[in-house]
Image 1 (cartoon, helix red, strand yellow):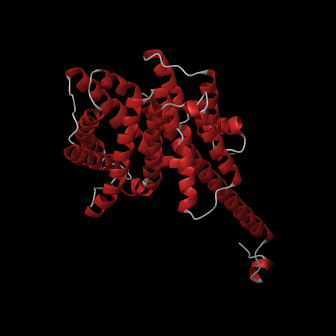
Image 2 (tube, rainbow, N blue to C red; image 1 turned 60 degrees about the horizontal axis):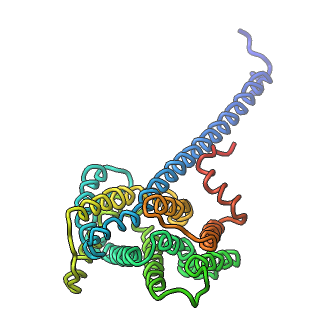
Image 3 (cartoon, rainbow, N blue to C red; image 1 turned 180 degrees about the horizontal axis):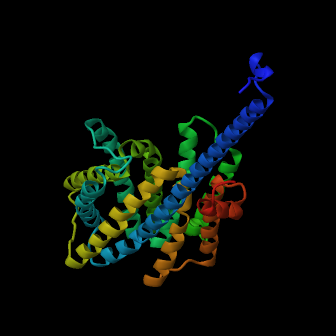
Length: 357
């Protein structure tokens, strides 16, 4: 074959230039398609995680909503708050460690507990023990519905803790939502006026608010440790510490337990179905979406408790208290959303939405 003049002069033929340019365009287009596909897959993975986290938190919320209701049945047997809590922790403790042994060894995000973890475990377990003691004491004094509504204010406290922890003043909208929430609580607690509230009611509200405060501290500050050691190991650790704390507390106060067979059976149900299972579900959900988001998803908890208390215990709320209940829900829902009900709808619908195009 006779070489062309362009070849002899060292120039690339025009046809070769066209082929090279086309190849570069095809390569660039392929890279863009791969990048778009990778982005789409990443968004799909995030949406999948969000969906699963929502389901986990909702299931945990349903189980936890029944805790106060079942406690009323325990108290009806004559068992005391101390007897319920002591049995609850002691029964739940081996189930937590069994769950770690069965599912937590080779699970992503889980690692064995180290000696340094025990220090933080003692702090968080102490907070959880205090929250539980205050909560069950409140339920023994006032109606389950009222105590749940007061406890439900903990997301507002989480927001305040977040602002204090980050050394920033809360936005005006969050402050207004916080005030709205506690105005609703006043309507629930004092539907006929603050001066007409009995000492009995104030005592129960005090214990319930103390539970909300300690639970909010425990929930917010434990996020980092959950991410470090995993939700299953963390749940087992803090419940073990809380159980030890309960034993030491009972040895120091020496209050009567009044144990009975029926009370033990009810307490066993609380320990397994309202403690162990929802704990694993809740903290796994928190690990995936964070405590703030999880606390907002738990909006359904008081409504579930209210319905169950009405159905099984005959508890009712007056029209003023129902209005206060609605105000509390709106206030908490508005803490992270500019438009109250629309924002709540977007929050709950977001995990079910597909990735952005």
